[in-house]
Length: 169
Image (cartoon, rainbow, N blue to C red; front, side, top):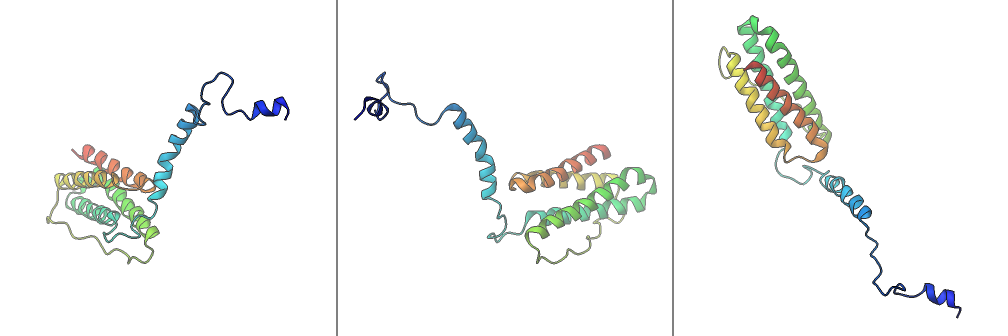
């Protein structure tokens, strides 16, 4: 056997110390950066095996109800048009976007019905503000339990509702 080949097969380095493991700091950090996307990928099948309804259905229903309430307040007081027309449009868009996301995961779900009539006969600005604030709170709570690919939509809804509640306050 030649001396060079024997030296390269030696298990311990010449200094007598144990060899370093293959996990350098750089490799460890790179592996840790891959954990969140890997965990998010594990939850992609949201709702497929669950008996509970998709939480976005309730958020879409609330968006339709908020839009109807704001429209009723607008009909009762046309001077509120500048404040409430953008809210009616935004909440209608929220309902459409949330329904689209629900349909993406459950294409067989029936189309949602019309929004319920407002609880009060002539809602005012305070009624709209309370409803939108409640929707913001609910959306914030729902967002905490959603998979990564759905958080952006729900967080956007929560932020928009919170902003409108502050503007109307």
